[in-house]
Image 1 (cartoon, rainbow, N blue to C red):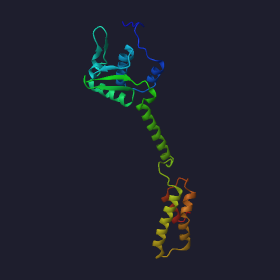
Image 2 (tube, helix red, strand yellow; image 1 turned 60 degrees about the vertical axis):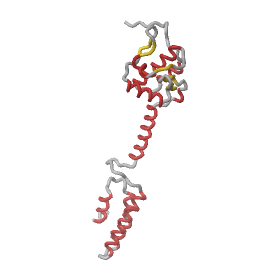
Image 3 (cartoon, one colour; image 1 turned 180 degrees about the horizontal axis):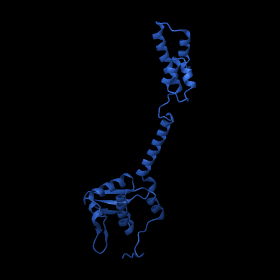
Image 4 (cartoon, rainbow, N blue to C red; image 1 turned 90 degrees about the vertical axis):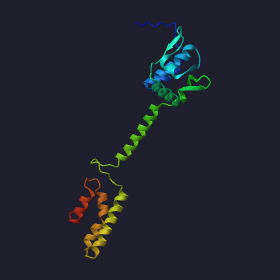
Length: 206
């Protein structure tokens, strides 16, 4: 049965601790980050010289060793890269020993949370969808702008009139054709489609 005593502890400021739990990390990122904090703040130092294998196997000698995370090497690589991209950790390569100095970035205002970026993108996407939905009727059919509706119907009627000029069209039919756009505009909320209204005008129902 585990029974930890307060004789040994990690001296971490409350402000930094609060910044850590307010930031979104994946499970492996948390494990790698806690391992780095354990080997730095746990030994009252700012940085520690590590290899990737230490994150999995552990670090130190028999009398004073720190157990590793037991994570797969590929998972560790991914977690380290993500923490580096988020600017949560600082890595200083040591080419001579094929190791690197790992430390925690104390300036938590410079951390970049992937979760916050995704949340911001989702909010922008929702706003865009709401704007698009505002131009759609309850039946899911798009309602064109008034000016576009009037211009489209006017051009359509003018073409129909040109085709019917040779066959002879009476003045009442021409009048209906020229007032069609205004009628559609005034009745755009009746639920009728453009085709239905055009058919009614042709049959004399309007």
